[in-house]
Image 1 (spheres, rainbow, N blue to C red):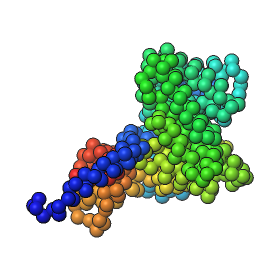
Image 2: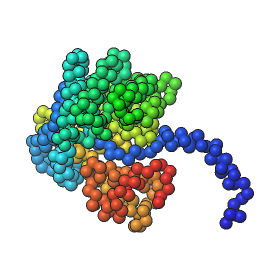
Image 3: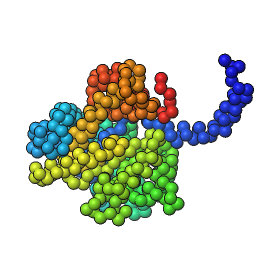
Image 4: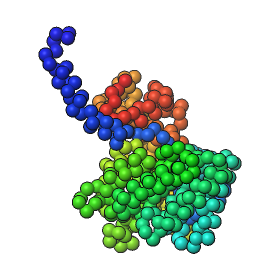
Length: 427
C-alpha cells in the first residue's frame, strides 16, 4: 500500500513534527491532564486555635447527633433539603457510615481570616500545636485523607507572619512525624499579583532546602478571592498565569466567596456562590485549570445550620441547593465550616452521584462495545462518564461491585479512562 501514498507526504509530516516540536512540548508540560489522585469533596476550615487531635472524629459524632435531633427520619431530611425521599433513603445509610468512618476528607487549620492576629507568641504556639495534633492523628490512625494549613498571604501586612507560621508548622511536623505526609496541603490566600505566586514558589524551594526535602516536594493551593487574581490590567486571565507561575506546585484553585464578592462591590445581603459575579470568576478559573491537573473548589455557605429546627432546616436547604449547583457546574469540592454541615455535604453529593450512576454506566458500557445504546458518545464524553463513576467510587457514594456489574468492566479500567490525557485514542 505504500505506493498509494502520494510522493513527499512523509517528508511533509516529518517537517511538521519539527515545526510543532516546541508547541508539543509546551502542551505536554502545561496541560498534563488529570493527575489521577483522589480529590476531596470538601475542605473543612477550622480556626487554628480550635484544632486538636481527634477533631474529625468529634465532628462526625456531632453531625450524627444533629441528624438525630433535627431529622431522625429520611422523610424529615427530605423535607428539610428538598431532595426526594427516595434519594435520601438510598443515600442515608452511606452518609451515616461516612460520618462514622471518615467525616472529614480535607481538614485545614486556618491561620488567616478565621483566626485573626492574636500576636506572635500565641500564633507561634498554635502553629506548633496544630502540627502536633496532625502528627497525633497520624499515629492514632485518625488522620483525614488530606490536611494542612492556610497561612497568611504574601501581601505586605501579613507576609512575615505567614512565613514564620509556615516554617514553624513544617519544622514541628517533621520533628513529630519524621517526614512530611504525602497528603499535606498548604493554602495561599489573598493573592493580588502573579508575583506573589512566584514568591510562594521561591519560598517553597528555599524551605525544601532548609528542611532537607526533595525538590518540588511542597505544593500549594491558590485561594482565588480578589479581582486581581481573575483579571490583569491588560485584560488577560491572571489565574492562568498564576498556575504557570507555580512551576508545577499549584495543586488546586479555591474560590473565596465573600472576599471576592466584597471586592466587586456586592453588598453583604447578596454575596453568594450563586451570584453572577461568582459564576464569572469560577468560569474563568475553570477554563484556566482545564487540562492542567489542578483541582477546582467552590466556597461555602456562611449560613450555619444552628438554632431552632426551622433555622437548621433552612440552612440545610440552602447548603444542599448550593452543593448541587456546584456539582452540576463541574465544581466537585466545596467548603464546610461547621459539624452540622457535614451531613448535607455528603447527602447532596451522594445523591448527585447516585442519580448520575445508572445512565452514565449504561452509556459507558455501550461505548466500550459491550452493549447497544441509542447515544453515540465521543471519547471526551466517555471520559466524562467514567469520571463521574470514579468520583462516586472515591467518595463512597457508589460501591465497586455495583459499578463493575453495571459497566461490565473493572474499577481500574474506569479509573484509567477517567484520568487519561485528552486526545488519547479509545483502546
